[in-house]
Amino acid sequence: MTVKEIFDLAIQTGIKNDPRGADEIKRLLEESKKDFDDLSKSEKEEFDQQKLTNPYSDSRFLCGDQRKKVKRVLVGIDIGTEEVLLARELERMGKPIDLIIAHHPEGRALADLHEVMDLQTSVLSRAGIPENIAEGIIREQLEDVSRKISPANHYKSVMAAELLGVSMINIHTPADNCVWRFVDNLLEKKNPRKISDIINVLKTIPEYKEAVMLGSGPKIFSGNEKNRCGKIVVSGMTGGTHGKGSEKIYERMGHYGIGTVIAMHVGEEDRNEAIKHYVNIVVAGHIASDSLGLNIILDSLEKKGIEIVACSGFIRNSRAK
Image 1 (tube, rainbow, N blue to C red):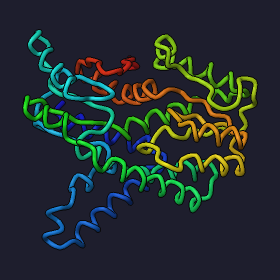
Image 2 (cartoon, rainbow, N blue to C red):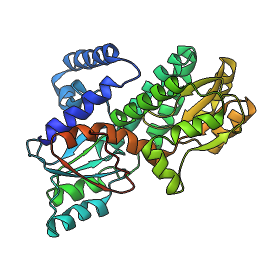
Image 3 (cartoon, rainbow, N blue to C red):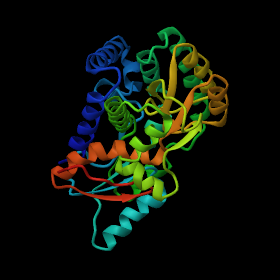
Image 4 (cartoon, rainbow, N blue to C red):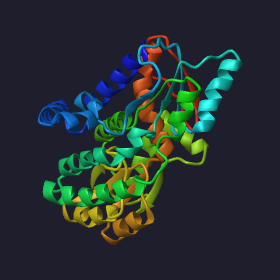
């Protein structure tokens, strides 16, 4: 596979598992095309044309040769300059890396991270929260995240990769969509009654089981193990990140009958609001969840004979049987 084929596969896998559905993604891409066509010549020069085929602003081809054939990839949750240097050191040791795959956004993907957050509106709406309420709460967070990431040094690791001649992509929301779909389907199938049952179900997933051994397995942040689950919603698994005001959703969740939230990670303010409104929170684990989502995509690469080298916290587990 080439770098471009790998990236395109990741995007298509993300679309397949997207909470909004493939038809909605198609509509969004058509909308981007119309927006582009309506621009003036000078405005078109500034338009990010990856948006015409890629609905995920936080996942991008970052640098290198898209036509390059790939035999071995270095995959990490966070890729900094040190991981780029690691790729070159592995080559010196006789293990050349053809492509670095980051999970968390770098470069333009980091600068545009906030744009993908509207996906969370669909997750909350799907769970029964009125769309106007979900949209208002997510919009406030989106604007906060946009301001917070604005001054960041977005291109630090990307420039290091360019200087060392290493190709690099990042796969964020497509992978997060995969873990959202996987966990949502599993919990629907198992239909846990109590919070302890949710923890036990999550621990059957190899990435979470490994995380337990590493000290970062699933934990109860609100409620206790004997609580009844009520209506379970997998929220906070996909759609970029959280911003200021994320805790406001818990009052609405309690009001609209949501009993338990499964999330990657939550802040202290979220926890306090959830406790106040009697909403249970099970935190599955950030890095383990990221790893699960990536693994679902990477299995397709392994089936094509591509070797996967894990670094930067990534827990590799193969389901490519």
